[in-house]
Length: 99
Image (cartoon, rainbow, N blue to C red; front, side):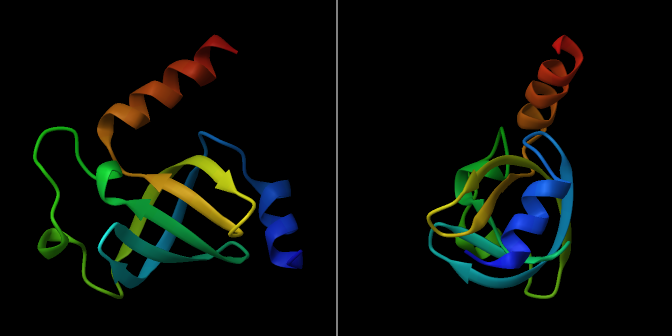
């Protein structure tokens, strides 16, 4: 496996905030370059908003810096799943306070 992947796993866990830069769009979400260490992040289309329906034309522009919460680690693809949905922020905050 990738050395950067292991460094990221040592530094972060589910529920932590992480920042990245949008590097690509796909029909299912946007990819981020996470410089902590360099690993690929993914914000799926369903992980953007609670209220409106997110569409590809509403995706942040390439080069946009985003901060989100880590929802999972995909070891098969060596990428971090991230959410910017307010309800996910609340859900992970409650989990952190209950532990």
